[in-house]
Length: 281
Ligand code: MN
Image (cartoon, rainbow, N blue to C red; front, side, top):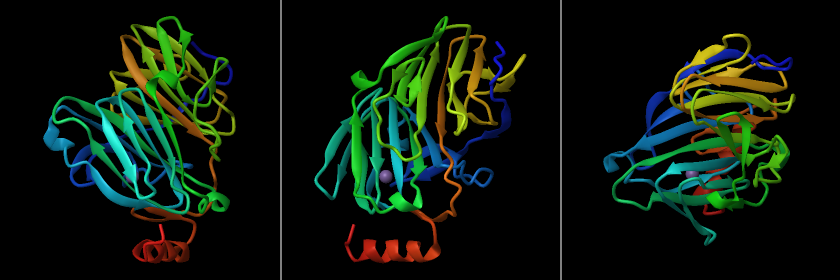
């Protein structure tokens, strides 16, 4: 399974239980005491529960400035709305890539009273020169996410970036992200080229996998594997398993962070708080 440019695992970290919004219980994977960020990624949450008490309160109106929030649904439905009059419904397999830019106030609320709610929220940083762009949405239905075979028994859904000649629907993002949802139907080996310029992580969300040369490094469900330099990722599974692979160009810029605002300096954070309080979002 070894290929010359394969990346190896440099670190495996576990997520931690967290509560956000009006009381949604989830697992925080990036933005933890062990992993503040993984440039250009500022946060990764997995929400997965079939107990409505864990998700029914949702995420009522809250602001963002200076980065992008990406919601990817595996199961369940969420309704989105914002202070500019945009609304949208997110169902299984769909994606919302929201560039908050200079500022938005939005809500994300469950559109179900019971059943499984499962998905990811990823925060992607914007470079200094784009933190104050006009907000932009890319609402992508499941039917617009292409699938491609990446090995025997393995299919990848391509949310962003290019994989084996297929291109994901997300466009015009500063950090040129790749975001693949890879599903092994049984024992499988997957080979996934990734841009050399990018930081890349893998997060198995269904059963365990191994990554990298020879036998590989085992990564269990719910742990994140940070990968070192290279041009591809080899993944092996001994059984049916699923994982997301996400990569982006690191920004190497200072990060000033306060809740839902992520800027470069403390002054810019103070400005963000003032602008929000003055209703300028
Ligand atoms: Mn939000």
